[in-house]
Length: 104
Image (tube, rainbow, N blue to C red; front, side, top):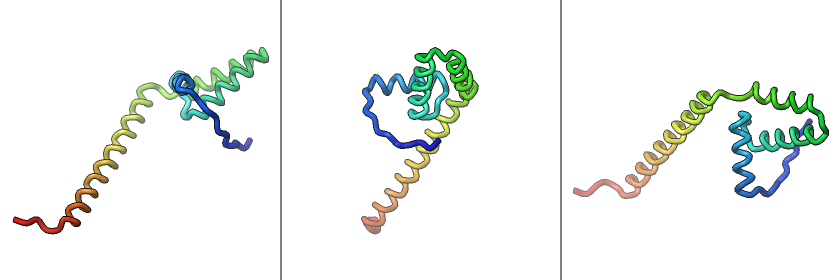
């Protein structure tokens, strides 16, 4: 099925709820959390206990262990720090070139 982009407005409380779903069920994106929530709510309201159980167990199987999530976050932080350091270094080079040779 082809996904179609849709814009929605969320409150800060909605963002907190989405982050909690992501953390609890190991969902990678906000979209995943919203789709998961919609499907579980719809299955629950129809009384489709088998589908609800399938959704919850399949999502739990996909859940990334906290230690692995932490490693991923730390890796991203290191990458960001390296990018910032490279950018700062480049900015210093540009500024020193514009200033010209140091006068002594």
